[in-house]
Image (cartoon, rainbow, N blue to C red; front, side):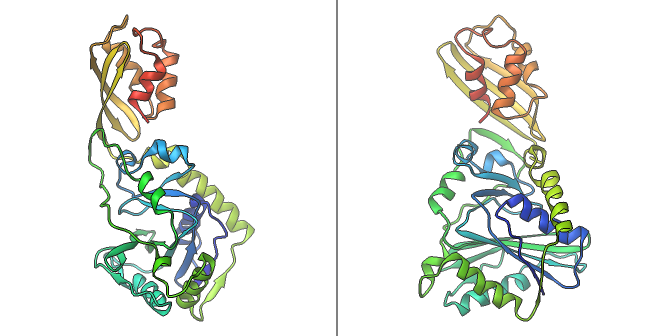
Length: 325
């Protein structure tokens, strides 16, 4: 076992480090990472962001949204929680969780916390979830990563993942909302997050080695973070196709938008309602098609094409707010 200290709370950097030591720089033994992030929503590879997170809430509270390379559901994590990763260089065609989860359960037992594996991908204490796990293959390697709720802000987690569903028809995989708990609530004695980390790492690493990230490693990891995890395309461009209906009621009447979105872009739009306009519906919809499905992009498109003022008592800003979060 080789442990690597990421030295970062930036989720994009940490995912990039995971990617780098999986695909670009292979060490001689299984790699183990234990890391945490600033407030972050990690969306699964096959999920639709809009169905999983309250984006206006996340934006207002500085919560980052990122897409994992693994499947599974969306998780919220902050500096009160931890993530762990195992990178194993071996060929396998099967998804198998227990060998990576058991060392974590054993470490918790050593601390006096009696936890269990639910048989799918979660760890629980007294039936309440505190860890979600996911796994993927990359370049002939297995990457297993999981989350640990230690002293996470559960109220913020609930607020950030409680979504106003609108009328969405999506092919994305939706998360199952479970009752959750923090590990800190079940420890025999109080423990701070850093002490908890030390206990977990020492137990799992045993007499293994420690690898220190070099300047060369760090430079390449930062490049990968920007290219593969921090961009708009990596988060929203990977959304599965979906249809959404959004309705706005304004002083000038009602506008009902029916949109088809693919890879984060509006590819087809229709609008109905009792509004008054100097433009036909096809012109309004034509402006939206090809636009990123996000409020600022929609507003820019409406303003750039002279839609503002063309609809009686409904501004471009009001329309954009009705169309996208």
